[in-house]
Length: 82
Image 1 (cartoon, rainbow, N blue to C red):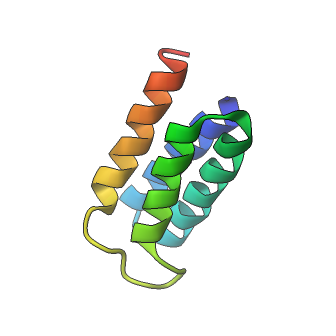
Image 2 (image 1 turned 90 degrees about the horizontal axis):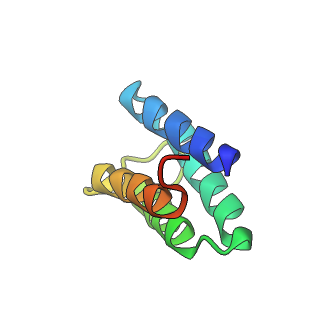
């Protein structure tokens, strides 16, 4: 649980700082941590963000900001105020 939340915060901070490659890494990590735990909503939101961000060094597709919010919303649904 803590790793997913930590990575989500780091992912958002990296995006604000313009480091989308770090955000890509964190999104993939969130998906890989959430899926085996059965947190399907978090995993799917993270996979969707990964698709929108694209490969390292590329320009992200429109909607990646909303996809980041979707991850946060899914985390809130699972963990609440944890």
